[in-house]
Image (cartoon, rainbow, N blue to C red; front, side):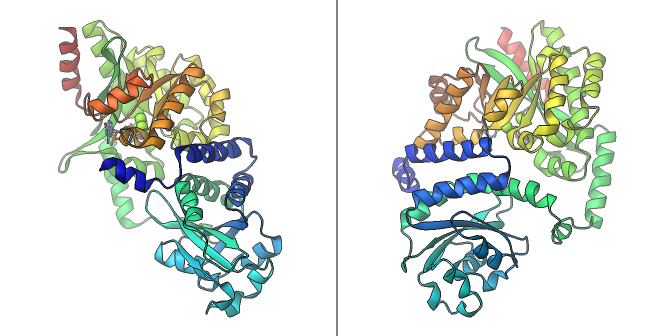
Length: 458
Ligand code: C2E
Ligand code: MG
Ligand code: MG
């Protein structure tokens, strides 16, 4: 039954998916800019979907305008004609696609009722039909771009064409999100200011409440054990922030971390968690006379601050925690966005002996190039690949490839999100040695960690 569902879901073969994944990754690594990378990737789709032209149209957050059209086979004239055009008056299926969020097609552009305004646009390339696939922002499910396939033939593109683009939709989304953040921000678009909405009264109040909570040390670390298979022992702990709210009880990070990042107070939370965690785990080490690695999450916004390594050094000195046993977890997407600024800080961190872990590895488009020149110690295979590894052949191959990659590059590898015995056994058989997940333990308070360590010593 489950197998059948997976088969139905998977419309292209794992081989084809991996080939495309690698192509997209390579394009990212070898391109000078995101725009360049998008052009390369569109070329890939043009080749795959024979006889068609592909274009990505970025829309603004109100979905009123097509702000930018990145195309491959289409002419400059075509792009110019499209730029700034009202979505409603754009080529039929693009407009419909944005409105409905569905895959749509216009079988014959010249017969489209909205044709008058844009009839000269398809004429430029003698296009007859088109199909649009919306690309969603993975966080809030908002359409941020449309992938459109144009054809000179007056018939609807095949299901297969659509399935290929759909399969790569999440990779395209990541790329486009980055494109919007980096490329467009450099250009002076009047609508960029609209995005930076004025701070609301509610936000102001929440910020004050959060700052007070930081001051009162209501934000504190919980710990999730990391298990090592060779020794069958606890390898270390990941410190995960929780807000011990006086009225609401324990709040998870998704209720305040992103807000803290957006309002530039994330460094205060990171510092509080790191210092408390170093103190707690140092105490644990001394009590049980055993070494544990402590892994902490650091926001990429924070790590680029000039005094980051100096502050870290102070925490290590104050808590007496050895640098060699501390690992900083940085997410891959964040690292890529800040790569220019981060590399110098990473060198300084390495001088303290501190390790670098790449969190949520594999969820970003570009996971290889930076491994060559940033001194990374560990990669954490993202739990989204582990979740369906039991019966999804694509996830199986991705897990195997990433585990092999870590081995080839001599990096430690940890698999996140191990929820069941089956997850554990499959991933272990692929060669992984360090594990984290609910199967072993949820993130818990220090007292519970002490009990787990004590039990292990029995
Ligand atoms: P992360 O660093 O990837 O942390 C792992 C998350 O996966 C944790 O969620 C953990 O509870 C959850 N998890 C662990 N095992 C499993 C499993 O088997 N299945 C599932 N479904 N989930 C599992 P949590 O604690 O809600 O943290 C969410 C995110 O918040 C973290 O993701 C991290 O990015 C961020 N975060 C947490 N603490 C801090 C902090 O002190 N500073 C910063 N900057 N970010 C933090
Ligand atoms: Mg983490
Ligand atoms: Mg993670």
